[in-house]
Amino acid sequence: MKRLFDMSDWSLQKRESAAAFAYISPWIIGFLLFTLIPMVISFYFSFTDYNIVEAPVWVGLKNYTDLLNDPRFWQSLKVTLSFAVLSLPASLAFGLFLAILLNQKIPFVKLWRTLYFLPSVLTGVSVALLWVLLFNPQVGAINGFLDLFGIKGPGWLHDPEWALISLVIMSLWGVGQTMIIYLAGLQSVPTDLYDAAKVDGASMIR
Image (cartoon, rainbow, N blue to C red; front, side, top):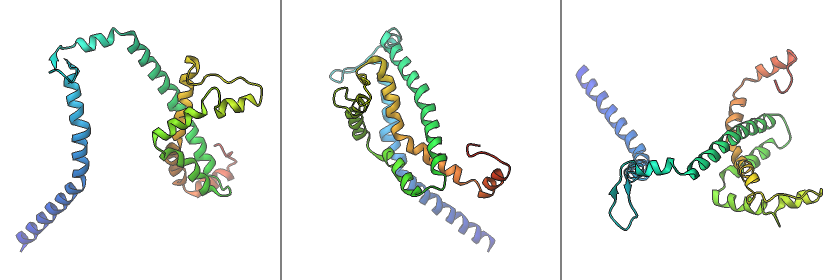
């Protein structure tokens, strides 16, 4: 009898494992076909001279040495690092600010949460086109607003001094996802702790 139960448990485990694998297999197949295999092929081609038309010719590390000797690579790396240093803290800080603000008891708070989160689910193409229109130096809404105060707006995306700042501002468009994560954490804090903090004289920021 005990052996019968052991075999039954083992059979149940096998069925559960098979069901679990069946559920995750589409993701695994997609990861292999569209991520891992293309990465491996690209890594191989990086050691070859390949122009799609002709067969790849092995050149070893030549492509990498050419890349490291290209000043445009270092300039691109500098811009990328600068963007990361500016964009990441700004997104985290702004997301935390919105989460704290929308964690308060204010009218229509659910509506405000939805409105602030909604831009983060829009497609990248539509968001990019919208920002191009907003940053247009002639007819853009941002420069039009500055003109009301007698301020001549810059060529946001055309001026090298302002292009990086413009991209950082554009990156804040998806701050709603960061806000949701912070908001979920804030709402998981028991209300008793907030009440105790108020009794102890803590400010809203604390």
